Image 1: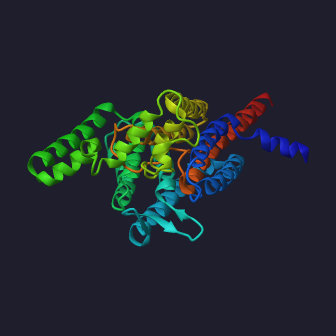
Image 2: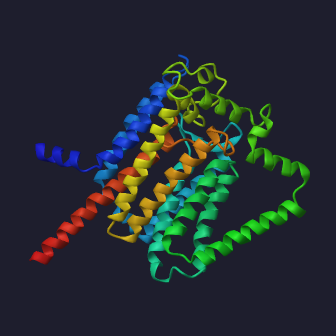
Image 3: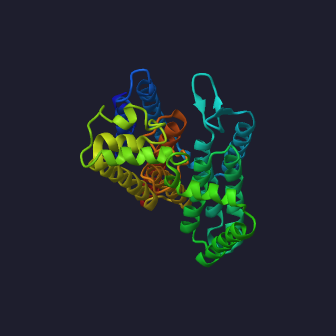
Length: 374
């Protein structure tokens, strides 16, 4: 019995888990500093406990069955159906129809859809590794991505749609596809947008695009949230105002502090030093995932790790960028820190899968060595 418990405790990558948990606790502490009628702290604490269980449980499962074409395609189809359903019968919140109301919590399919896309692209590029230089693989993988992109974009959830596109771009870069072909596809897209801007878009449409890209140009209107976020970050100065003393967030000048602007709320209370600490932890987390990618026994595991690292990087860049006024406000949560169960469980599940890949790849190498010795 003790040996079984010891084996379970040794199975997960606790460094990987520790980095993610530390980020979650930073987010939790930030939520605790707000007004008493907000119950985000207690609810998020429950989600963190559940996410911990998900991570440990996932790390014990042999996920190599994801290499199967039938499994990866089935996951893709199920997620496409869920995205289609939520866009038609889902709950509308803040102008977006992105959630299923399950009573005790809201489920957002866009979160697991990102992992489903990583799985299908990892499988696709793995099967075609020998002939990956052909341009058709850009188009076919782009078609898979476009299905999810479109279903998420029409909700409309612009932030998640951007992340979907970034996942495809990252996995294209590491798959071995010809960079010349990739440059051609990107160039075609840029030219098409330029033509639309010059000959199709009306002045009011151009104004909306400019306001979206540069929200601080209209701080009394569409740029109000972005402006309050930059004020919160700047007012934290070097060491912050202290936990519970974030005036922008506590007085609710900063909207959606627990989700869209958690980095700004954290920076106001912890200052520039706290922001650097967050960036260091994210860097460590991505580096640890890439360490597992470098030791993966097959291209599928490597691509999965790289794809999920891309998810974390994309979320972090977009979220922090919009919190400091460099990028449009798109409602992208900060991984492991922002409030919410769907994204937290999905992110810890992905880490558990990566930890499992490492565990079972070690067993495979040991088994191979034993056979060689025999």
